[in-house]
Length: 456
Image 1 (cartoon, rainbow, N blue to C red):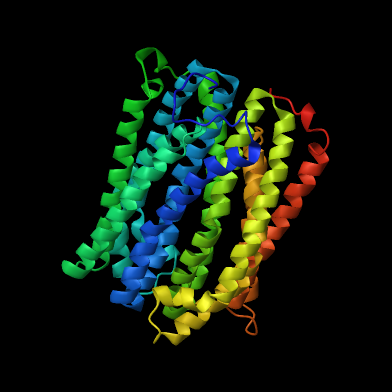
Image 2 (cartoon, rainbow, N blue to C red):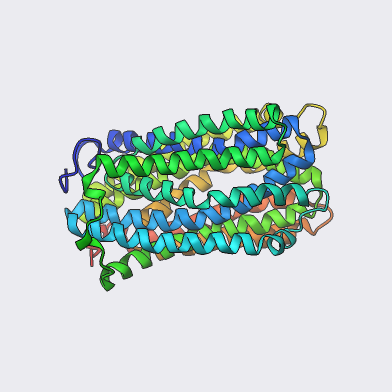
């Protein structure tokens, strides 16, 4: 092991690349698929038992919560890249200092986000053009969900810390327990207690608390290397700068991506409850479908960062080849499944009697789902540029992708002959435009010359 961290870790700088990436990525993929079940459980139970208005409320709230948590996730992911680089280079002391700095900085941002969310909840909802029929339900749901932001930070911080040293299994187990608990509490609070959307929100918060606090206690107990000592509690400028740069750029990338989605959500809300409800259900299916390649991209980023820190550029080139082939094959398979089974998938969330909602959702899935190769490639580009100390390029690609999506969505949907379907087509166009730019930059700067990339 690179810095002496025992047993439950995977060193990605040695061994078979394909198997190493696979065994490291699979727990991350399963973990994020389980994490999707947090809101999918709410959506499914709410949609089937509380009606279209409640489904629209929870669906719109989901877009806002994803935006807020993406800030924390981006900060944690950025810090995780720094941890991976230091792990790969064998610098244990620097890693411990970075862990303390990241804890302080991201903890402060979490507190600020929580305050902003509570204070500005009504202006934010008005900005999203939430219909009057849905407004009180969504507000009630969000007010409770906001209480769990701190637990979201704790879980993602320790999950990224463990994944940086090659342990992607333990975060999965804690998440699995939380997801099962979330579903059980959903059924208990909604069906038995009759709490409505309030019950769905409390179920999620309790589950987040269990996963966050549980993972924190486990990491501290099992890995003495993560216990922050008095001598580690120093805000050295070089460490602060490194963590701040990586975390902020990755945070900007995640936030821009989800802010664009939030703007699209506001546009969707203007088309009425049927479109809102259809989008709320379809976007869960969509996210669930391409989530594995998103997590594979994150695993790829850790692989790149560890090998970059160790100076193994030849291994990086081989890893790129393996990752591209694996991702494209998976995306083609998932696109085929989603296109064929779009209607049965919608029926999981929406009663068969809601024919208009189902038809809109199927249309969305068959447009966007046909082009998952575009977003699969984009996730690999994000991971590659984060891993080689070029996180700013990930931000550029995100701005291109989401900027195109937002602009096209508003322009196309305003044309009567196109309408809401223009919002769906804007998504793959944004993906492929960003892919083109990302691959062009790679060929210009790194193709056949990657060994010259400096570690400085």
